[in-house]
Image 1 (cartoon, rainbow, N blue to C red):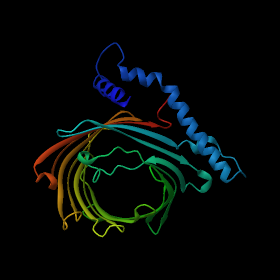
Image 2 (image 1 turned 180 degrees about the vertical axis):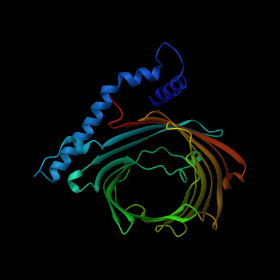
Image 3 (image 1 turned 90 degrees about the vertical axis):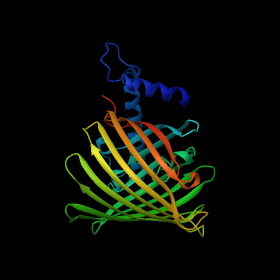
Image 4 (image 1 turned 180 degrees about the horizontal axis):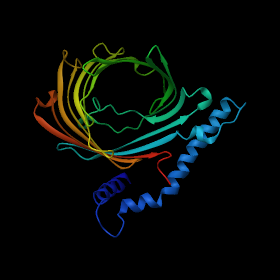
Length: 313
């Protein structure tokens, strides 16, 4: 079904802003599904309310306290040079629980896509989901987050993830510096550690420059160290159109000594058709170790829809 619906939606988007008397296929879908989006968001609010009342039924809160609960569905089309077209999806539900002091969230989502690691040429369908309870707090200007959950896939995998990030603002010439650490303990992958740092500089009202470096380590493998460095420029054209121009290098010691395995130059374009509906186009030119660093290309399209208070009238 995705092989039929997704191309139709992509084609209709091209005509979304055309000056024609008749509405486009996508415009008709948006209009005709307004009540359905409202019903889905109201259902998420009801789930949040019921769960919150189950935890604490001593008091009732107004339903507006739960309106920030939302859902997200993202459909993706991917193609590597000389490869077949692949389709994928992303699902995320986040339920607000205000009686727990707004620090807890119940989250159901497909495995997160890390654009620095999940390359199109090596991409597998994202069929794993996880359900977890997250806790966020701020202590001594350090953002702390804990997530206890269960990964749902071919194997059930309980996990605990701890995250921290500290940001120093305007350390030099309006540059912000962030240092972060993630630890994840699970049954299948054992202990995973991700350390990272990021520099951010706002150049003007439209452009910002960023540098991101990451070191990943997996305890279950004697040789599984990964290093990523990415330099990217973000551009806000207007409230509907955004570009990110990035260059990244990937280093690991899997099957070899520690060495560069991949260079990549990529442009990410996001267009908000509506506040709650977006389209991504992500062309990439890459050079990898397996192909003797010969230039190759890949492209990815995403179509995402939020089910939130902005998604209906």
